[in-house]
Image (tube, rainbow, N blue to C red; front, side, top):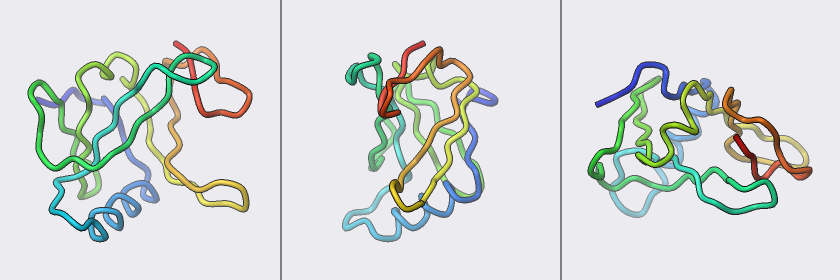
Length: 112
């Protein structure tokens, strides 16, 4: 089951997901996005390969890729946009999340 507007992807994020899936040593269905309790602000985004759909996971299909949403993360990710950014100092997935109330100074963790 997918929740409308759970998470959207930019073109750059979709392209990066496609590239990661193509490079995987094992067959994968897409990427899994979740949150974990860590970092100085309390929560951090987690992105990993999804080899299968887990029980109660939502699946978002956007721009030709599948994003599997950990059920414990749905309330923290609702309405978010996932982007992929490469610059001189950082490369990786970046989330624009309307539920965030603040981030730590380094930007690695957030709180709601």
